[in-house]
Image (cartoon, rainbow, N blue to C red):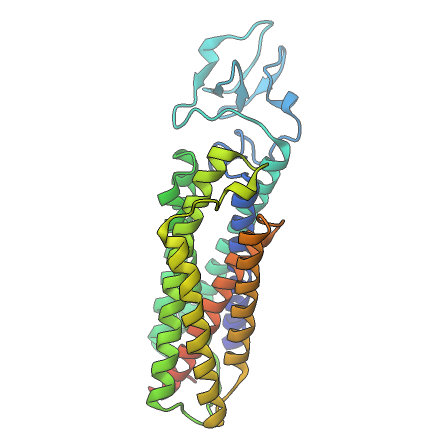
Amino acid sequence: MNKQLQRWTRISLFLIYLVIAAGATVRMTGSGMGCPDWPKCFGYYMPPTQAEQLNWKPETDYNKGNVIIDNDQLLVATKDFRSDRYLNSNHWEPYTKHDYAVFNATHTWIEFINRLLGALSGLAVLIMFIFSLKWIRKKPIVFIFSLLSLLGILFQAWLGKTVVDSNLLPLKLSLHMLMALLLVGFLLVVRVATKSFGLTKLPSKKVRLLLYIAFGLTLVQIILGIQVRQFVDSQVDRWGYQLPQFWLAAPEISFYIHRSLSILVVGINIWLYTQVVRHTLERIFIHRSLLLIGGEILLGIAMYYFAFPFATQPLHLLLATMLFGVQLYWILRINLHRYDLSL
């Protein structure tokens, strides 16, 4: 049972990170409205591949909820019926949650894959939660955070619906991202609390303080990065995807803070590295942290000075969330060991 829970926790974490990467790709490619309804896509479980599939057709069977595009408007079938020779407005009603009515096959399938990964992650978390039921008395923290993970993934699905209904409102997109980080945190608690290990040496108070500061700076950078991304999105709306050189031509103050703070992030983590070496502590976490930070900085430089090369945006976000995970895992491992909560 312990191995099954650990296995499904790992699978859940892996899928959540895939969803984060897929979501970032959706934003990078402008595919957020590739499926303008939710949870289906143009009213179908399997999305269309050609625009012609969304045209009204005579002598065709339609099911309730199917969507067509007519005169730049989404129309939804109100019941199951077979169409006549002419379009009958009594069989259709306008889609009123937004006025977006564009079909792009590439955008549709990118968004569909994102949703599919989200559904798979939800299934994995559900299975993990079922295995956690055996831990209610043995170790309540495992059950509690498995339950929080399940509730979190359901809330995340609802947030996804509101994002689509709002036609990609930036604030809701940001909440969607922050909820994904919270899910990573919940799953990491389950992961650490069910993993049997022992620390050869506990870090000193100074090392722990440096780690907490480094983790806090990571959180601040992620929040600032989300603000920068919101600004970039507004510039994409203004200039289009064909002119990325103008997206950060006149950035807001949050960009400059985000860029300058990276110097402090590097300094704190190098200081943390020297303390880890000095006290002969485990180096794997600080090595991974420095590697991820280096990648983050290189991607940031590429986006600013080379006009957002392909895939730099989703990779930048993915590395940030991986850094968040590595540092939080390190913190949880130290503290759950200290308070004897691990097996």
